[in-house]
Image (cartoon, rainbow, N blue to C red):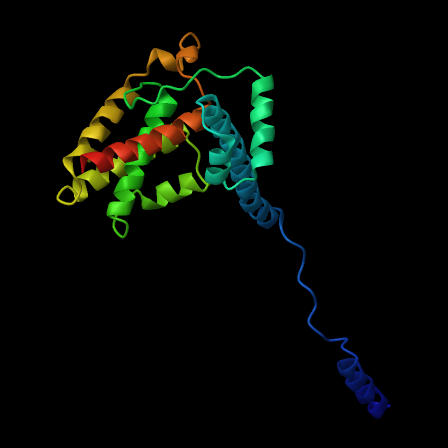
Length: 219
């Protein structure tokens, strides 16, 4: 009898009856975190595609050739032509003002973003704003009032900590942007919206690049 019991135990071990049991399924919180990460990437990709389409329309409306647009966007010329044709069938937006001194909120947020990018590049290892700049660029953070306030705080801190390294034009730009953000323009209201053509995303992107170019020219 004893031998049969022992033999049964041995067979159980050999047949894997005591093998490691699979763990339970993902918790709802774990699944939510996984999908949140995926959704961030997907959302950022969709927003970038929309922004690229808007930029193509704007450049085409300004007289840029489809060949040049295709070269810059790394798209095929037929793909660019298709988007340009679509834009001609719809209402073409008015030309966008590219002067730096504009007071609508998306434009000012873009200028702040561009300033933060310049500070991040100049003081990458020590800049307080670097992580925030990267999160905005990759779509992990959005331009909410709270996030813009936090970016302002980080930029101001970097300007104070790296005063000896950064040109005075960086502080001047920040002071101008900050004052304007504290006093909303009529362009942000419903009655003034027509004075600020382009989506908020497009305006931020353009303002950021123009601000960076201006700072580099002033350095």
